[in-house]
Image 1: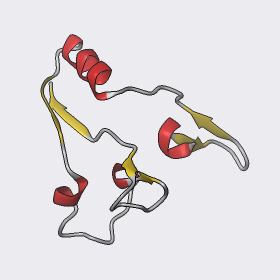
Image 2: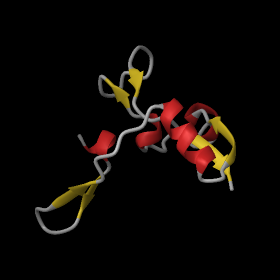
Image 3: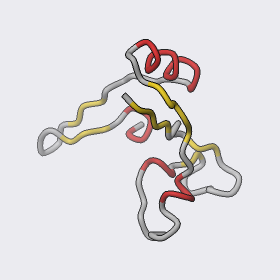
Image 4: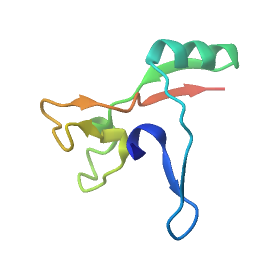
Length: 81
């Protein structure tokens, strides 16, 4: 649930989740409505090609670690304001 909902530890055994999910269409529309432009996907393989040991949720897949056949769960969108 953490990779999808953004899990943050706030105490010894307490966590919070932002509980908001977007698809690319709804997030793009929201960003445009807020004045963002140049909205594009970015590929974690290209961004981290010189640092292959780096691991974060931009490259999280379901099933876990199945980067060849799995489904990427992050939209990896960038934009300009």
